[in-house]
Image 1 (cartoon, one colour):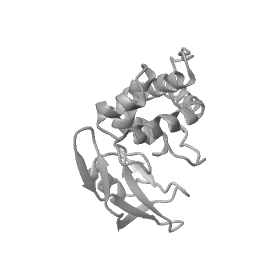
Image 2 (cartoon, one colour):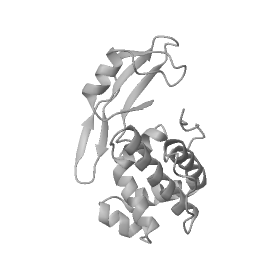
Image 3 (cartoon, rainbow, N blue to C red):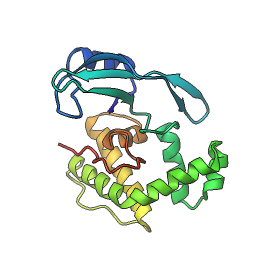
Image 4 (cartoon, helix red, strand yellow):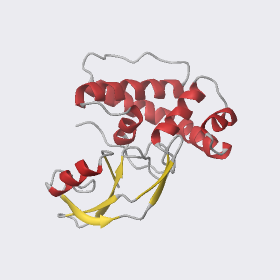
Length: 194
């Protein structure tokens, strides 16, 4: 899987001109059909989407090109999950957040638990990105919790990325900076700034 821009025409151009690189060996990705259809739930709508697939010219492995509005193995848009995480950081419980977002309480509780379990790793990862993208940033002010620190680091890193690399919604940057694995339950390493 490779997280790409949420612009199918742009992704197709990058795929055809050879500028997309294999996440496994850095070889050139070439068009390779489409992946299975997936459902994406935004805040107030649902869409059926079929992501592009690509094959590496070097190692011959295939990758699904997942738009940055998604996180791996999640049905809900990254921004919806981000809204839940921010609401929880300000004191809202999972039931209140679930009612606000019109999602099952178990789903929201799962997001919050997964984020809480990964908070220290995410804080460190996004702190690294923030410092790499903004040379003026020498430290990040601690918040009242590890979860708060992780959200602060995400905010600083995504803001720095938008300023330096061009505008993109914050949770799309968060998806891209974690390779879609923001809430994953695997130990796969996140992409690091180069």
